[in-house]
Length: 253
Image (cartoon, rainbow, N blue to C red):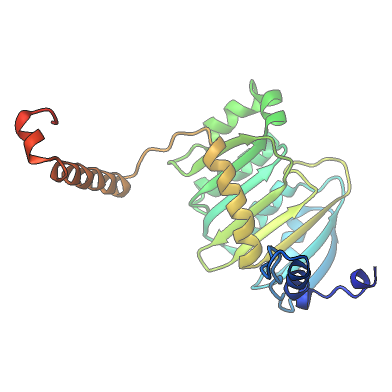
């Protein structure tokens, strides 16, 4: 009990290594010391409308903003408001949400059509997909599948996360309790710029999209040519491996 009270993350790896050694399990541990966090400017805010929040926060390197919102706050509106206000050019934007509204879809369409977003990934829950498959789901495919910039995935997820990478070098993660549309509830939201959190969440989103994507993407010219060259090289290597005796008999072609 005293060890728990005096727990210190500085020597967490050493503590578990000693315990493992004492139990005859060797000195290696699966637990490693967590990376040290840098001091970053934190801001705690209370907002009712997404546009007002976008106007009054400054997202910069290693910044963090914690927000409490009321039931009329629309999380999805914050993306467009922030991107347009800062005139960001988005390399990639990935969203995971339980549900969204037609207004949220229209806002995302504006970002792609306006040239703000190069690539948009959207993950929704199986619950939402089953309830909206005859209404909003067809609308999503029709409106957002623009110039091969959109991917849509459906999975058993309850995560509310948005990852944004800008061409100016920002890696922004927004996460909290709110779905993209308003809920009538008080919600919490964290807006954080940082490579570690972004990369972690983006890797999770990538794994979901890879398995549960619903749009078949055509192979672009460069990748197609690389695949053709790779296949040609593999064929040449296989032919070189054919024994001369078998090649003469024609048993291998």
